[in-house]
Image 1: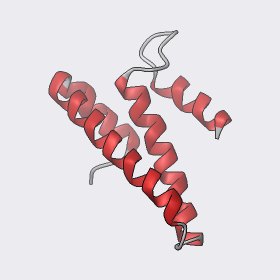
Image 2 (image 1 turned 60 degrees about the vertical axis):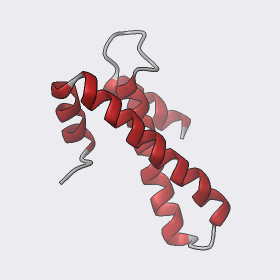
Image 3 (image 1 turned 45 degrees about the vertical axis):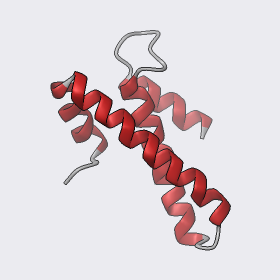
Image 4 (image 1 turned 120 degrees about the vertical axis):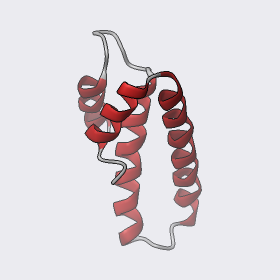
Length: 86
């Protein structure tokens, strides 16, 4: 997971030292959510992890709303890169 996090940060950063902008946070949460989705297919009764999973989804939703409010073009680009909306 740490290696994947570095690659996600490299892909979505806006300047060389960017590690915590909203776009980067959304991308990291998306990769964690995708990982946990696969985990729950194998282990459907893992309810303890599911609580954290739902919190991550809520946090990503809030961050997406923030980006949409403050940067419409960046929001559209981010959605397309992450393949979130269809």
